[in-house]
Length: 554
Image (cartoon, rainbow, N blue to C red; front, side, top):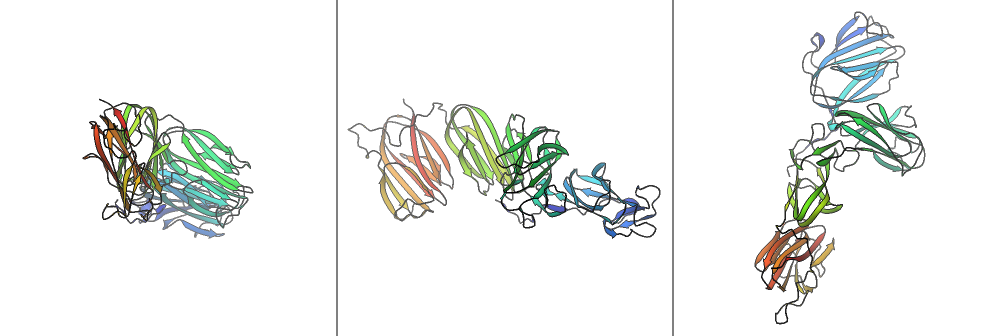
């Protein structure tokens, strides 16, 4: 897997200026018009270039000819924005409003204290005229503004208050990856009290058009707004388990979700998420901008197939290009038969069939191939595939193919063949000769030899015994058995590598680090056959199993 040394930040400060602003301001400067009234009326009494909008005049005024109260200012310049979500941060006493092009981003045209204000807005890629208007009524005068690009809208902006109604100064601001907290009797941070605190989280995400259901589960009160509309109102003391929900119909595009929460006393917990209520005709893809699939998905969509090579790019331009995850689910109707389920991923992946996990490779990988063979399917079955990308290239594929032309359902036999006629010589039923080696190459003298009645082992994190190590060992089992004529399917289940010979034929060759099933079919004339299975364990859990079934007779 290709790895890159990246400096990961959640905010990228945009400082590029392209194109001139009014009166040919130098790059990085604002053209400013100052008025001796609070309504921006008439001709400005002062015009100049300001290098930055970061002023604290106190009880004074901005300059000669301007009063200390009842004045106003308009700043303008042209600015390049890379497409994405931007967080605008304003500190103003009194009123302020901000436009980016024709989009009114902030509208606080009223008397207000110098309380920090943060607003997320999606700005398409391009150059825009940024216009900022401000007025001072009476008292102290303060005005500062800045903005930064929020990579993928990947975090919630959390504002924490030491009061229950958020009507007090903030004591903490931070980025939270998800609203999924269980603080118990504690607090979110040493700066926050354990009881009688509140939080406001804000985040802007992309939604496909559709009907969404928003959920809140908390101790104590929670409410959720979508684009300023109240969707969930559970602003009262309550404890878990208690889930509240509300629906919102959203058009395609960016929407701002705000979650407010308060803690009164006792345990403190806050959880919020949502789901799309429409039916999915293909794969339901839930895309998360974290590796743990926590919080609500940043994107839900219909995916026609799971066959993606994003390289070092994100799935969509507003998501992060590393440290994201996806969950795909789909119910399919299968014709009766044996199937091979195959996936290939960079990085981690796991696959469920009808709520049972059948491939579990939740680890960084370099586009490794894993499959389960000989799976008999008939009728509807639900598949779920989970995937995460850590760093570097992001690729994932999943498909299935016919495992055999024979469509008869399995009729499993035990892992010993039928008893031979009396005149036929054969090994005692169920007696495998087992040899264990203290390396993964089956080299040298075996450290342990013994007979075993079944080839069905789950050593977990342990070892086979007899001084054999728990990792980096190998084993060979042999037995000669009588088989009546017929078509047989042999199946191994192993962690890690396995290979199987029936007679002189190498039927299964999965000699690699893996966990899963491998299967092969062979036609056998009646007679004695040696069955030989070889296995090696690399690290972690150790499993080795062999079964076979008579599929059909002549």
